[in-house]
Image 1 (cartoon, one colour):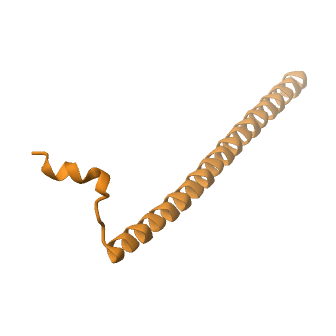
Image 2 (cartoon, rainbow, N blue to C red; image 1 turned 180 degrees about the vertical axis):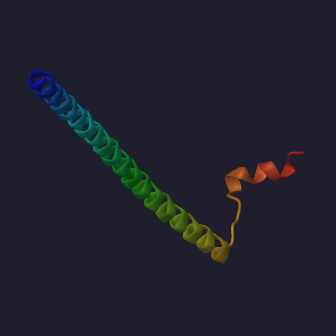
Length: 83
């Protein structure tokens, strides 16, 4: 009887240890996934910043052109006659 109880305790302890290892593996995998997602978010944020900077530059360029006025170059004057 005592041998069965001890054997049962050993089996339960072994299973608990395996369960803890599996749980630690899952946590490790989740941590890796979170790090990958963080890196992707950082890359997207940097890309968004670059796109906003380009948009601002384009807006400034358009504003300058509108201030000066746009005149068609003489080499393209023939386009006005095309119907």
